[in-house]
Length: 258
Image 1 (cartoon, rainbow, N blue to C red):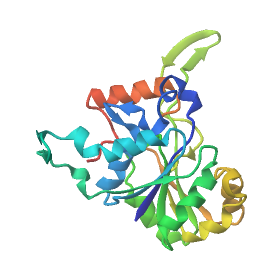
Image 2 (cartoon, helix red, strand yellow):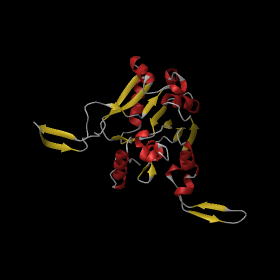
Image 3 (cartoon, rainbow, N blue to C red):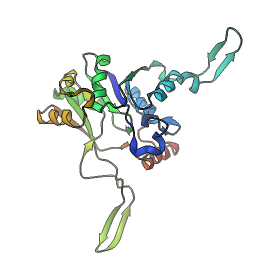
């Protein structure tokens, strides 16, 4: 299945990193978080990617154009007929990556709408360029096929961003910096969409996918949720980027399924 990834937003809450590059290119363990997301899908057998570019999209173009050069041992033969020999092989060599310019100011549904001609008339995978999970990528696909709905999203319980206090009156008895569970599920992205989604992408570039399209899908009974109680983490803030980077560096990254 083809995978559409939104890579064009401004990432304003991560301004420490996104002043000079788009959020999907912010590094985790020395690699862009976009690479980690794509590796998740590739490990499940999905290697045909459509990247919806916008803000500083040239950074993503340069990364993939020079991917082999920047990740391989090479031998250069200089002269009038230069030659380059690459000595390193990669698991990514079977990837197909379409770099699609979708506009600087385009909203999420507008970017998705622009990607649909590249998808064709088939069910496809869709997510954002800033979140990772240890969820089985193929499990929600099987669930989606059993439901017959237009859209299925992965519902997750986010890790707490603030310290959790257990109190006896005004005395703190327990403190947990990062509580692992919240009461409510939220949309974690990692969606499966039927081609009929086209009819829900209103107002062109101005359309925000998480508003009217998702609301309409829910109202019409066309939105399903595959629940995942394991690891999921987006990267909205510098603190979250540092936490993901630390997990990877320490060899404790739950999303590393490859």
